[in-house]
Length: 243
Image (cartoon, rainbow, N blue to C red; front, side, top):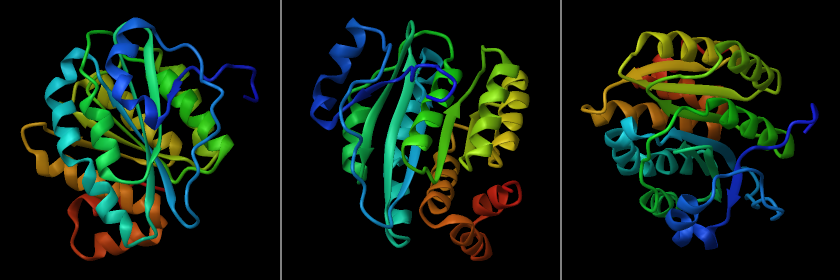
C-alpha cells in the first residue's frame, strides 16, 4: 500500500467458507493471505459489501442475509456484479471473502458467520477497500451498521482517499443513533456516495437500498438514474446525494 500501511483484513477463499466460523473464533485477522486475487468477468462490476457483525447487529445480520441475493438479480441485466463480503466482530477480527458471482455463494458465506460482541472497526474496512480499489477498480462499496466507536477524523481521512480514487460509499444506517448518523453522512459525502436510514423491522427498505446500490456498482450513474426515473424511491434518494 502506498502509505506503508498493511492491509488489515484477512482474505478467505471460497474453499474456506465451510471453515469460516471455527477459524474465525480461533484467530483474529491480522494480514491478508498471499492468494491470487479473484478473477472477475469482463464487463462485470465489483462491489464490497461490508457489515458490522458485532452483537447489536444480530437482527440486521439475519435481514441482510435474507435480502442480499437481490443485489445480484438487479445487476444481472447490467452486465453482472461480483461481490465481496467484509465484516468485523469480536476482538480485533475483520475478514473478507473472495469476490462472489451469485447470491448462493454470498448467502452460504453469511450463513457460516454469527455475530459476536466487540467494537466497530470501520477504519480497517475502509483501508481494505482502499487496497482492493488499488488492485482492481471497484464500482462502489456498501456499509451497513448502527454505531461508530472510532476517531471520526481518521475515518474521514480514509473516506476522502476513497473519494479521490473514485470509490463511492453507500452507508446504510440502522436506528439513526446521532453520533453515528453524523459520521456516516460525512463519510458518504467524502466518498461522493450516499447515506440512508433503515429499520430492521422493515426489510423491504434495506432490500431496496441494496438493489439501488448494486445498480450503481454494475451500471454506473446511468443505471441508478434509470431506476430513479422508473419510480424507485430509494434510487432517487441515493441519486440526489452522489456526485
